[in-house]
Image 1 (cartoon, protein in one colour):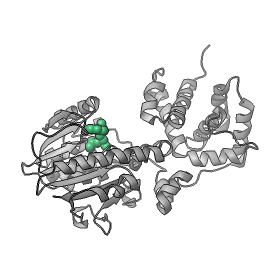
Image 2: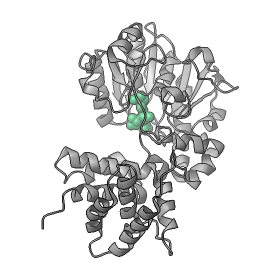
Image 3: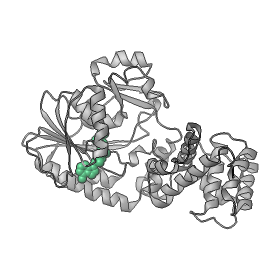
Image 4: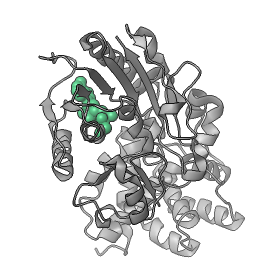
Length: 410
Ligand SMILES: C[S@@+](CC[C@H](N)C(=O)[O-])C[C@H]1O[C@@H](n2cnc3c(N)ncnc32)[C@H](O)[C@@H]1O
């Protein structure tokens, strides 16, 4: 049987939504399996875009669906998934309702097509509209409190593209050449969707892609002047590149050989150097001392929700608890390796208290408070000298990822 054009893309989008919402996979993991059977780049892009927009607007789409059904459809009902997909095509991509219906109903062959048709047509007749920004789920509201609305509201559009420059002295040159905006030495911001590998400077390794917030942990260690730093949990290597470019002798350690391969490629492209170790930081023992340690710990990554809206529907107390336990162990080990006079920076791209500030109580070192003078204009640490960033910060410039960063010395 020949498929309706565009049907494989919609089927793949449904599979991706299912993998994220019911199996806890990331959208990226889900993509690999779901897109395998799709050939054309346009269909792949469509499947990806549908699934990502459903994740971004899930709470609002579900509220619409619930407003048009007498008996609430269960969360895992296929009809609910298909109606979500239909609403996204109409409300986000501007596909006319009749075309949405024609391409989506074949997804429910042998299933409740009349129901999906009826719910979608009711909503189309009502001319429902999405709010200006996505609405947070109840679970996110409970965790993030009063900030939840503004953070999730800032997810309406994907973020701009941030580049980190190898040579901070060339900030003005690259800002002008790339036509971007710079918010800190060594930083250039470009409009979202800019194709990376066509930009000048990519081939020669003059810059790499890194969100402004993600550059802050390495910046807070200052210039290396030939001293030794251990980049613990280093791959794919954004912070390794920064540290090497800032004059540190870097040892980059990660448990994942696959991710370290990306780090090697990044070093090759930029002409920077680091010693690379594949090991589990929970059992590895250093053979030498380091003047500084940067622990960019594995985390739930809820701070990257602008780029990965699926994270907000996958992460709950169980995952946060597991990560917090791992982070506490890693922090204790890193702290125990620090010599007198050494500096430790801990970072997570998470907005969860347990992974950030909640980790600071047990570190047996002296806090080295972060100061506003060390940060890009407009950013402030909290009164105690810890730094929390989130997507609502520097709003006119396009926001930034969510991070927690703490610093100590021995
Ligand atoms: C947040 S990512 C690091 C990002 C990286 N610092 C950068 O800037 O590109 C966390 C990393 O921790 C690594 N990781 C997780 N558990 C680990 C362990 N027990 N030992 C070493 N690395 C681990 C993961 O493979 C992952 O690459």
